[in-house]
Image (cartoon, rainbow, N blue to C red; front, side, top):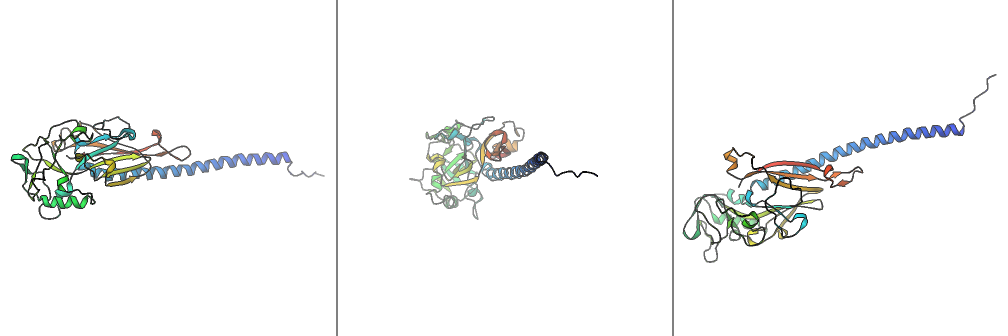
Length: 312
């Protein structure tokens, strides 16, 4: 007669439980890694899209900027410091700033535009419009300045043929009163009319074309993940971006923003090289560490870049 085998012994049961635990642990780790991978992929796609969106927005502003006015300000948060034009390979964090041409006045609001680069500079620095209505420019500037007291008389005029000084001095980024890159207006004794502007004598005014109206500076700064655009401030009046009327957050979880240019880009294309430079804009978004937390580590950052023709 065969003897019946008894049930699992305690040792055998414990052994089975251990085996099942090990197998279950591997299975859980595989599932965790699978879902971690899905989350990382989703986050990478989302953050890359955010970087592209930021570049799309700021490119429109850089396109209407003056290449020779682009500077690095306030490295590492230091106040009131100008470090000159951005340099390729410099990975320090700066506030990138420039002065933009008033494209809104060039487009106008009906009839003749508020501004045109085609002007005549007469005796005593008198600027006469050939096909523009300065009164319309004044109306546009007041409408866009958010009631900060700005109008045409508080604007400035960039002369493409003006003396080529150090950028920090030329556009008064260092707040030392430099006026080498622009003209201000002498409207106290000579009020602005629809066709005539009287310039003051603090610039080497030239009797040529390509004079552009300046309404505001622009600055872009990364601070604790927030990427902020500053506008409605006027460097030629000694105003810093920190006092700007407009401060708009364009993105979050941003680690770095850089701008630089390669002097050889399109150097044989006169249609481009005669009008500004091609700049590279680069935005880096925070990545994820091994625990799926946000990190500023460079090896984990998600960076996107775009080349932009800064036209003036």
